[in-house]
Each structure stands twice: as structure tokens, then as C-alpha cells.
Length: 341
Image 1 (cartoon, rainbow, N blue to C red):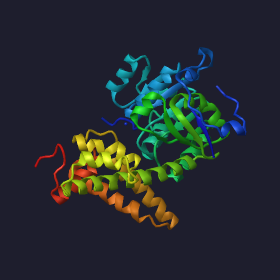
Image 2 (spheres, one colour; image 1 turned 60 degrees about the vertical axis):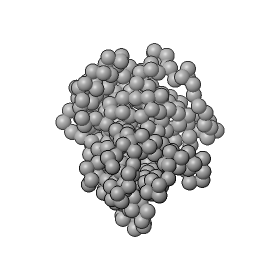
Image 3 (spheres, helix red, strand yellow; image 1 turned 90 degrees about the vertical axis):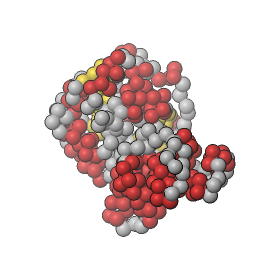
Image 4 (cartoon, helix red, strand yellow; image 1 turned 180 degrees about the vertical axis):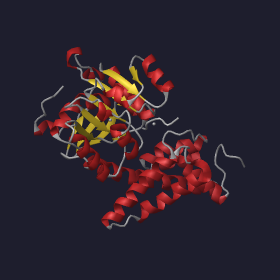
């Protein structure tokens, strides 16, 4: 495994470079914005499919780095906003990919990725031979391997490249990319990867490894959100000042990135979706399927999945994933900020 400094959803309303030396692959350094801009003559053309909160930020980062970027989304208003910001727009994935050297797909799941690739007006109809498709959706590793094999049989490259970091880091070009694919796929995609991410992890020479790493991340993320929600609501039930609880925990051993990032939403009573409950219903469900196939027990992840399922069943599936705290509050009669007494 090597790490390089340098990568939402499809809105339903989400030049070849020499490979560095082995020593260089082991280094990690933060690039400044000055490192990111390419000479005009060296720029590959990029299409971003899916201009949700993550995809829009990634497309903006690419454009800011000097790339010619075409955006495509099912929301015409979102495409118009990207065009107004200086990008190009396309009505379909096929049209977006027609002149692209790199296509970055930033959609929700495997089904949407497959539709973008091989469905009506899909990328595979028009993408040039030798171009690369960068898939950022979270999906079962077996599906990633199947899609890669199918696309590579047509003479194009597939890079399995799920992302982590959130919308703000996407807009800043500072995501983490967990990628796997052939050396040729990495070489083709690297200019865009460098512009979108602060860190690129090369995790193998075949699709599926990146997806598997992302699922381990999602197992932890989902469990951490569920237990953080449980803890903050339990604190409220104890009559504690939960703002003081947040202050104490974030300075103590019980803290986690998800507690620190998500619990302010509870403190403010603000459940506008940054990442929706349904995302973890999907991702923890994939983990259950993977674990069952591997005959590997994941009881803690299974319990977290039930918390997200109950939250979605309570009508909060499209709300912010910190809404798990609201589910706990409703079940126990506990009052949280912003909720009716």
C-alpha cells in the first residue's frame, strides 16, 4: 500500500504520467494550491457525473486547478449553477463523456454507477478508447470487480476510487481517495486525482480493493455515529448540559471524529442532510452481506444498522444521519434541542 498527497451522490432531487519511484510512493506531503494548477497544454479533459454536495465540490476543485470540466446531473438547475461558475454542462453522461479523457462518477451506489456506464445514454457509448472511468460510489467489492471487467473489455480503464472527507473537503480539493486499479488506470487518472484529493491511497492493482477498504471505513463510521447519538441522548436523559458534555468528550478519550463532527447537529437541532440516514442503511447493509458471505460475525455493525433502520422507519431517512439521536429521543421521551417538548 502506498500513499500519495494529492476524490455524493448523483442528485436525485447526490495525459499519461510516469509512475513515481517506490521511495516517492511512500511519502505523504500536503500540496499547496500552487502545486495543483497544470499547464494549459497538459490538461486532460474531465467529465464529472453527479453534481451533488460532493460531486459539485470535486468538479469545482478540478476547474480551479485549470481543467476543462463538463458536469452532468439529473438536476438541470445544478448543471446551470456549475456552468454559471465557469464549467460546461451536458444533458446526459454520454454527452459529458464524449470528449473526456477522464470521467469521474460521484453517485450513490452500484446501481447508479452501472446505469451511468452501460444504461441508456451511458458513458460507455461515447468514452474514447484508453480513457479512464473513476468510480467514487461506495459499493460491494464484487460489484466493483464486475463493472471494471465489463468496461475494461471495451478498451477503457476503470479505477475503483471511493472517497472520504465530506463536502467541505471536496470543495477544497482535499479529499482522501481509497483507490485500486491497473497501473494504466492510475496513470490516466492521476492528474485529476491530484487536484481532487489531499491523499491518494493506492491499494492494489485491481478494482475491488478500494471498495473493500471503504466498507471498513463505513463500518466504523456507522457504528461511531450510532453510538455517539446514543451517548448524547443518554446524557440528555440524565439531565446533563449536552453542550458541556460535547466539550468534555471532545477533550477526552471517548471522543471520535464522528462524535466531534456530527453531534453539533444535535446541539443545534439542525438535521438538514449533509449525509443522510439512508446512506448508512445502504452501507451497513452491504457490510452485512459481505460478512455473511465471508462467514464473519459483525454484531456491533448489525446493531448499528438496526438503529439506522429504525430512524429511517420513523420518517427520517432523508434527514442528516445524526437523526439517530432523534430516534433515541423519541423512543425514550427525551428532549433534544430543536425538538418539540
